[in-house]
Length: 219
Image 1 (cartoon, rainbow, N blue to C red):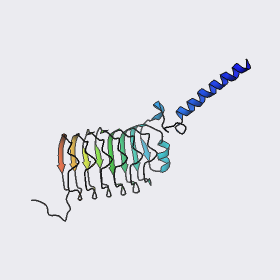
Image 2 (cartoon, rainbow, N blue to C red):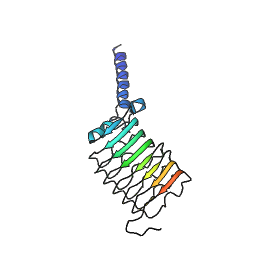
Image 3 (tube, rainbow, N blue to C red):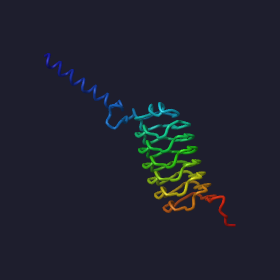
Image 4 (tube, one colour):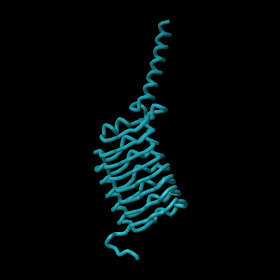
């Protein structure tokens, strides 16, 4: 009888341990919450490293995720995030890359602006669609759109600029459609539109100015 009681207690302990393993992202192999536990309901704002770590393990934010005026150099810690309603990355002067967002697949609105040290969009490699508007700029050090290689559609408008150091649109090769306006400019270092050759549908198009102010313009 005593042996059966011990056996029952052991089984209960195993189930309790398994429950903790599943619910606690620190114990899970992937580090991500599962099921409804991984959903952050409402808006969330990141201004410090502690704010970022508090969101670590979540896979979905149902509201706006704003990363504002933080001292962060990357977004490591958000690797579990696959979907957010709106993502704003604004005024992060030390942010050099978007590494940490590799799992992000879809977002309704995305704005990346006033990030002085950001040189590329590396970290967004799995982003496939933006349901609404996409804003890239101003970002004074951005030289490349590399990282957007899997982006296929923007449901609203796409604004690229001003990005004074941007030299190429390479990275947008798989973009097929922009439902609203495609606005490119001003990007004074941009000399070519190569990179958007796969685009076959756009609501309207505006290009310019995208030439150096020291170069003569055509009448």
